[in-house]
Length: 127
Image 1: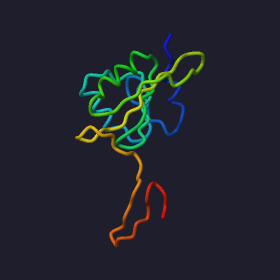
Image 2: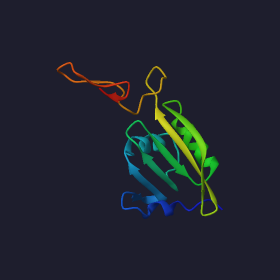
Image 3: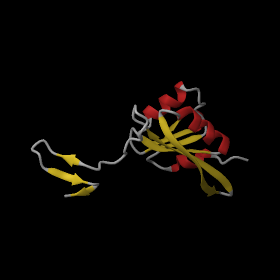
Image 4: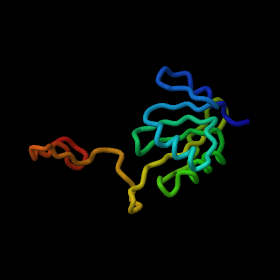
């Protein structure tokens, strides 16, 4: 029996949508992509880190694989067993948006120079 995804809806930070879809964070772009690509939006927990990356938690491996297939090639994906909860396997599809040339976009600011020319972040660290 697959994991009951409604158990992720207990937090005040998680929004519940129809069909057992639970979302947290930046989720609209990825929900639109999944919907347009024909992935059935039901029984999932979407954690959007930002507009470019996040994780979709699903109750079965086949749903996780289908989510990954719906996101390719616009997103780099990785399907993995997230763990066990209440005696049931919980699967996840991690995704990161790709640039037009196929490279993966960075989800974090690694270099930042202000308008006045001062570099405040270099190599992911404050200067």
